[in-house]
Length: 347
Picture 1 (cartoon, rainbow, N blue to C red):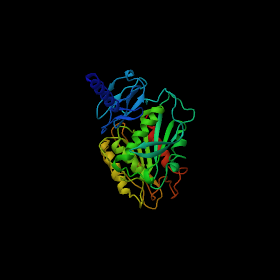
Picture 2 (cartoon, helix red, strand yellow):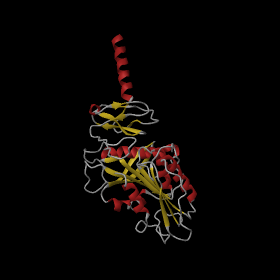
Picture 3 (tube, rainbow, N blue to C red):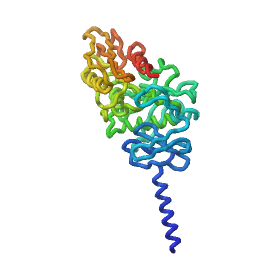
Picture 4 (cartoon, rainbow, N blue to C red):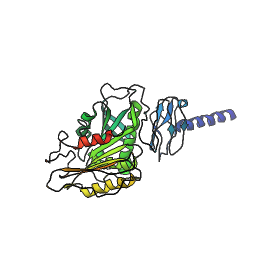
């Protein structure tokens, strides 16, 4: 009887251990995480960003693992880091480098906080598993969809050629309300999945979007400044929250002088947050006269590696503005070229 009870106790212990381990591809760490911090056999808890670590297939002995309730960091043998926290330049290879692509272009689905979320992924033609690519997120406007963004990704795909991986996520109810941070969590999980399956330079993550999509990009600038290298906010507003908002990040703001949907005063306030965070010299940038149908670009003098650029244009609520017209088209707009130039300065 005694041996039977010992056996039951041992079995209970094994069950407890099993249930305290995360399954393959599940979350196992990150700021605010309260779930399991170790993985089932054959998987290793791999750091993706300060807010998300994931159980990746592989041997933990290939690197050094530090576990904790707040964060879990694994240095994989495939990772090559030439950058530091104080120097955001260089290359940090994602876990997917050198492993062959496990993701292809198309619509993807995942479950986030019990909800099915979708995004469109665009992988470069002739993808090279050993080449770390830029990763660019394009967020749609209120009432828009990922399908509206995916054809051109705000005009950036044609400028990138085959040098970047593009992502067009779908917002809940065609917006980015980010209730309880759920849209930020969605981004964290997309990052983890994409960077596990593809080769990404983790120092070359970017986000952009128009209107509500600009608000989501601003929210990422606030809460994921150490994850993303730069954002481009196109006629956005502070609609998706600004958790944190104290760290520097390269910031491009483009806004219409006569925007009646999201007033330019809000765009200026969003810009000024990162003027302060980035240690920029304060100034009052010039803006075009109403009726001129032109734009004026101002580059602030900021801390090295963290530029702020502001472009005010004489028009309304337009994401792809062009001088001399109210048409909203990436084929004639100055916004795609300015955004791509801003993102491309980081090598």
